[in-house]
Length: 101
Image 1 (cartoon, helix red, strand yellow):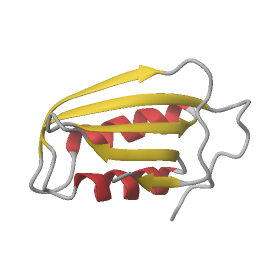
Image 2: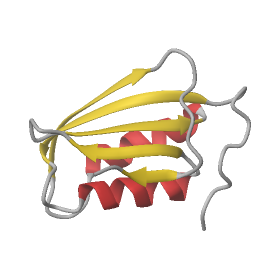
Image 3: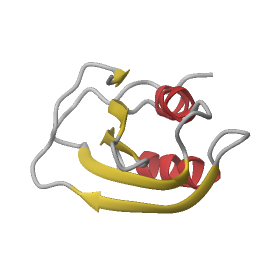
Image 4: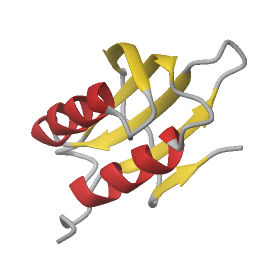
């Protein structure tokens, strides 16, 4: 069952995540998008040139906590070394959760 997306920017916050380890070439972006949609988050995920993955998530604090837990686990085949989470000033905007290429 999918959670209802956050519709009010007044009650939502934005977070930037940086995930390092063996996180490219293992379906990590697809896993991240699936988890974000399941939790009702909006935002994006992309691979970085340094081998890490970064994501911006927009939603409520408890959603971000669950999202971070999922990122720390990752999909089968990944080995997450670290997850850094930063709350962003202001609120980013997005209609859904996308993979950025």
